[in-house]
Length: 100
Image (cartoon, rainbow, N blue to C red):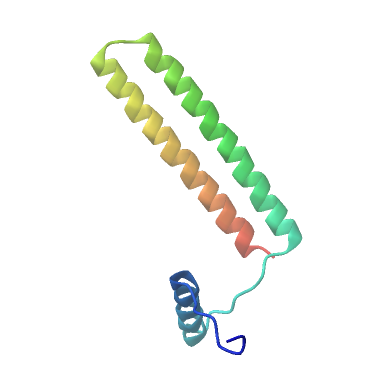
């Protein structure tokens, strides 16, 4: 039994298919440098803290008002801020990945 191949998870199979598709399309996988990994981790941590800060401020504002219209406005603003921060984070991480 030790000579038999182990079964692969669906995740591993999907990753193999994606790798084959990339190779067929001529896309070369370039590993990240340690500096890139550190910069990406720092960017993620920064935006994670900004998102947490916005969440705390949003909850505080929501507790201060009972007006449904104002609460809806606050919710919409909070969602826009989250989307903006998430988009900024993803763009910065992609930029870090591309620059060697």
